[in-house]
Amino acid sequence: MNILIFNWRDIKHPRAGGAEVHLHGIFEPIAKAGNKIFVVSSGFAGGAAKENINGIQIIRVGNEMSYPFEVWKNFKKYEEEFSPDIIYEDFNKLPLFTPIITKRPKLIQMHHLWLTSIFREASFIAACIVWLGEQTLRFFYRNEQFVVVSDSSKKELKRYGIKDEKIEIIHNGIDDNFYVPSPERDVEKCEKYLLFVGRLQKYKGILDVCETFEKVLKKFPDLKLKIAGNGTFRAKLQKWIKKRNFNEKISLLGFISQDEKLRLLQRAFLLVQPSYKEGWGLTVIEANACGVPVVANNAPGLCDSVVDGKTGLLYKFGDTCDAAKKIIELIENPQKYGELSSNCLTWSQKFKWQKASDETFNLLKKIIAKN
Image (cartoon, rainbow, N blue to C red):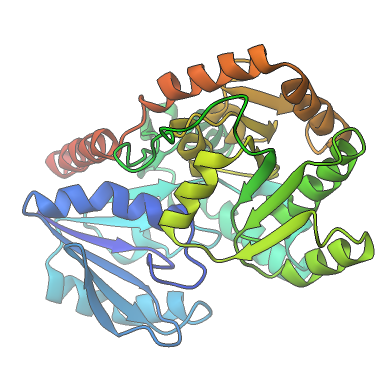
């Protein structure tokens, strides 16, 4: 099978995130099975025009601003060159309008919709563009087959008139051979630091986790917070930390390797996930696989990946006081913490990339057979 994928970024892009991890988790096993995978993504400084990554052929064009125009301009060339049996479009903020420009079978990947929450993240003009882009789902995409990563995302799509039978839920996976608890991990001995892993953007709630930490610190002055990741919000975050003289309490680790990420997760007391919007929240399950419970915002996606009271605790949406209360509860109750930690390991075993890959490949074959 030849599969042509349109994804705004590839796994080596400086701003790559969960969507790119998902793409490789799904399609590397499919490529390994002998299928040809071609990914057209936006270019970046230092990125080769073409590169093979673990069996997936990456074609980089333009940049993040010009990417859709490059896709439209060269689409026929891609069809002729790669002879795809199916088109896979990752609908991320803005549409590529594949239902208009090709009659070939298609599968539309949707991690989450911004809806009106985009107005909290971007400038008014940029937010309007994204909001209008999502409205195209009602007109140009309503007859296409979608795949989403959570029940929250499915509910959002249905608000745009996409029929239930046109939406398949295939959960994210993890590399369960990589994300494992530390052999030395012990509830009483694990380091007392909270951990955030993700891009430093406004919608990720990064200041919320800092304000939550500030509240918890009043009761537990030895606690620390480690923040792993880079992003546009880093400068504001640094000012906040400096203003409160928290340089010794909050560590900004910047971009980290996968090995460092594993080490941090294995030794953390809790992962805090304050994002206002997620499709699922990959780091939640990665932390769970290391035996680490998660305290998370009761937001779309996170309310799916965190089983409240079983694998972690959800706090009231955007309420840092409630978030602090939940963290303090787990610090003061080792027995409860231990129960969550044990449940995390069981829960995480349900999510494997091979399973998600197999389900996706079966869906692709089903779509092709119908056309």
